[in-house]
Length: 440
Ligand SMILES: [Zn+2]
Image 1 (cartoon, helix red, strand yellow):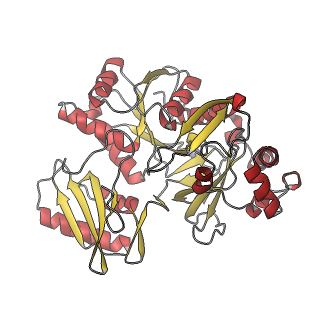
Image 2 (cartoon, helix red, strand yellow; image 1 turned 90 degrees about the horizontal axis):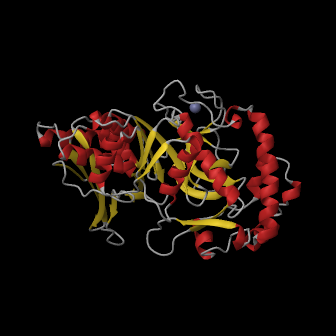
Image 3 (cartoon, helix red, strand yellow; image 1 turned 135 degrees about the vertical axis):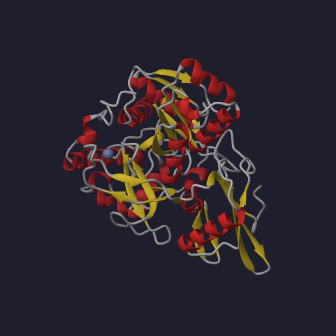
């Protein structure tokens, strides 16, 4: 990839004066709120009850009077009860995978699809992708937004796209080699899966042509990105997104070494709340990300609770973009486990474990109940190069975890590489709570 073009903004609004952008946001909020009020009975009722009058909105802060929209609201109106446009205007439907029960169905008008293309193009452009690149899209094409979302953004750039979809790993590796893919887009954990498969074939992933890796679709910690970068000798760029809001591309990392992602805030307005009280939190405070769509036509959502835990940072970034940044997501409010009264995210365990070079990239958390007590077991694979004493390594891991988790695991186990189950297609599962139901 050409590094001269690294971090080039795709649209002028990315580097605009924040006051100017605030004007754009406000105008768009008035428009989208009016649109929803007139076309979605759920929102006309909600706005009336809250005393929120779209034409009277004078600042973004007026939004705080609007109640949150939740995943449950979407499911209660399944499949398309919250859609604000006639069916004729809907050009595409996607749906979230949804673990058990009905999926969340999302609709897109022509303009919604254009916005989506644009925000994903911003992501690639920030990473230096050009029309000269060959880009392998290795996320599932289908109802899942990953494949099509990643694909369409690269069309804007004009790159040569290899639409592999997910899975069929040996074929993925063959295409990387034969077509000399410069970059690859995938669900984060799949980057490790392909690297391992390449090694099993006797190949060194660092020698493969891929120099840039685009990841997302799962909680992606900085520690995980470091591991992937080393494994492939490539730059790794993360993005944040969710089907309900647009799909991938709602926020994007501008530099492979950056600890945060720029939110495309001319389209998606962010707030951080205390997930328990719903109070809006300030800059730098960690809480649940809430997003309002400012330009969506088919499925406008107001103060949508994403369930993702992060924090916001204002002020200009070294890259020149002025849009607000969010930290890499540290956990999900619905994918957190409470052990003896303390909340633990799998991502915290990951960050601690990845600090130890003797440990590999695969791990799992098992919580069970032994009598009246919660029992937390953490299992990590050792690194393929590891040849030291396993008991010493387990002690070292236990010590680091106890210091950083605020709860001491009852059992820490280091196992051989390849022992923990891999996920080839879809999102990786690392947290197993056996107390209420067996999730395996
Ligand atoms: Zn930046």
